[in-house]
Length: 383
Image (tube, rainbow, N blue to C red; front, side, top):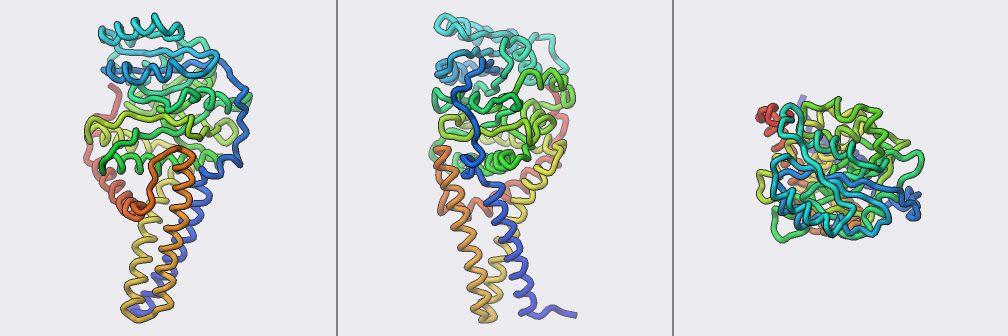
């Protein structure tokens, strides 16, 4: 029994409307960062002592260009601990020089004998154990805060019930397609996990802008559960230990961390692949909600365009108008949401390019899924 042309068009329309409703729910209740003020209960008079931990590896130029923005934060009581690999003499000399100007800067090293554990996790563990304060703030040597209020904004979220505060980070804005692509990719992913965290479903975070209590680290034996991975010191740690009651989100332009633009495409791809490798170990519904977003968005565009084409060919102008109307309405709502978010974060704005990136994003994800399958998993184990 064959499906008639009209029946196929009607089926596509039903699919289109269903996926449109799903996308509407995503835009309003997952990508809901613009509702943040409704959830915001932080107190900027809260200024507990903080310990900023940075693990630096072959990054003397990053330290020279980025560390001062952290050391010169407008905050009453904080220390900065840089952990580097033993033997990096130039970095040691640079940090010693900076100590003359900044008495809250400390540095230590990862022993050369440490060969059977991720140096990133070991470096953070060394830094946490060397720290004198209860609240740990994590970032990277290749990143910098966009204002001197970053630590104030992060700290303002801590209350007796708060163990985690997660913030927004993205690449610095430059000209060119590659920069627009990687910023959009990170923006969309951040909107998902930050929006879900606001909705009391935290499932991941970025180590470029993350804070938690030292007590949580010790109580859960640090990174013992995922020592075999290169990554996991940020996303897996949050995934395993953050929950609806102990996690808050800090999201304003003054709390944004900017990441140095990757020196080449391979570095960016390697970081993306590392994330894909560890995603399979996430627990909770967050990863499924996030993953289904890209799929449903792609299917929505395919079904809406298919409905428009078939209804046009059959001269069914009512269905044709409905199909185009859902596409237009989706575009308007998405642009409104993105503009609100980008305005709050002083982020690059995506308006006319949104449909293009919406179609490109699923293809990019498929590409990385294939690369993950073809990649030797040992390349992403401890180093």
